[in-house]
Image (cartoon, rainbow, N blue to C red):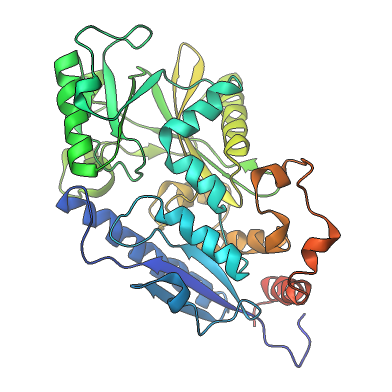
Length: 384
């Protein structure tokens, strides 16, 4: 319980509102609007649970938007991805929240920056033996050789190296020869203003693995049902499958959760997801996407702050674990406070116990932090 003279801290639901995009396709605005819908759904759930919630749309700089809300009185439910689809704004927002002293949901800027950069994610995973499809990054179509690359056989799938939400991923992303690869690299470089990641197309089952908690726990596995497709090379979770409600892909790529998977394989998938989640340094909640071929789970991507919309995969997995939408949102909020002082986990190295781990000096930076944490913990167990 909170003390009679202490009001429970408010919850700031921070999200971006963009009116145009700096890069990409016009249809990508649908994904931007999805963040707004998600933020409103979470806000409604928290209000119904009894929390004092403020929606904070980011239409300008984060610092100006949060100026009226001191970090000693508010915690942040973070959906900030930056304005106009600019590269790595999501990581900058998390770093800024930390620098400003806020407790906030989800991963810190270090984990987000690793996860958003697909090639960096894959390099970190491969370095410790976590399977991920072979890949190469192309900065220019002229870098594509005329002959197939050793160790990178066709077909390949080509994606922008630092986007999520399946931006830039459609049927044309699957290429079968150097000329098609060259054309797709040119498309990504010109339209999305970044390098293109080309990776081996893994023919196999696709799983989404939601992870949360401290220590991290795997929620029930979800498998994408591609049974409506006859060509296995069309079995991708494309932009249309995620966002275009009038498309065939949207209606024929359902997720089955819990997935029908034999226990041995399910355990291996869960173990691989946990390793990937921890290697990237995710906090609070996240999702790992993978494909399984010949019994091997290959990690495709790690999403540090996945979509929490009521109809999205994370909410579906939480529901399968026995959490309704309100319980899911309040649990994620509670995880942000259980991490302790915002300056206790400024890096992956600190969380993994290196010499940079927390010392007593860190708590002195914000002497009111412990008091805020106690107030928030009390409100989480007994919302005002």
